Structures are given as structure tokens and as C-alpha cells.
Length: 102
Image (cartoon, rainbow, N blue to C red):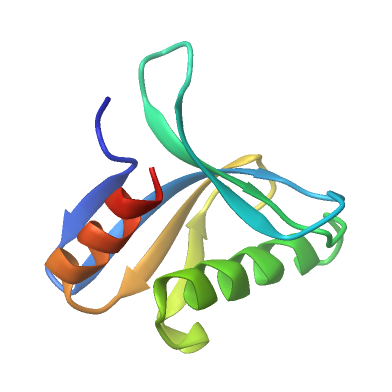
């Protein structure tokens, strides 16, 4: 299974499948979709209205990876369950932290 990320010059893009309105906020590991792409499963309590679930996802990813919340942003899939989250920082260190979640 491949890692659910793409290395960038100044960080990584993390591929996430988000489930809003969950009972708790958590990252649940990596899964592979039917088309063969890997993504990190995430659940947040926030509702998918006015970007609340995306903001909760950004905070959850920042806390889990130990980076400032300002370095995490949803850059694609704002209204979709499948999202791309950009994390600015040392790409190798971030990739290792993500792979440890799997």
C-alpha cells in the first residue's frame, strides 16, 4: 500500500477521506479505495456546514502531526469527502509522521 501523500518542496499534500458528524475527532489509519489510491481516514465531530468540518480536520491534522495549525490547510475537495490537505514543513519528517499513523 502506498502512503497517502505527495512530497512537495516545502511540505506534503495529504490525501484524506473525511467523515463529519462523528462521535469523536480522530485519524483512523490508511485505507485504499476501489481505484487503488490510498488515503488517511479521518472523523470529526463538526458538521459539514460553512467549512466547519474542514477547519476541524485542519486542527486535528495539526495536533496529530505536531505542527502549527497555520501550516495546515485544505487545498482541494472543500465540499467533498475526499480532500487534499497541504502541510507546510520539513517534507521528510512530515512523511515519516504520516507513515507512522498507518
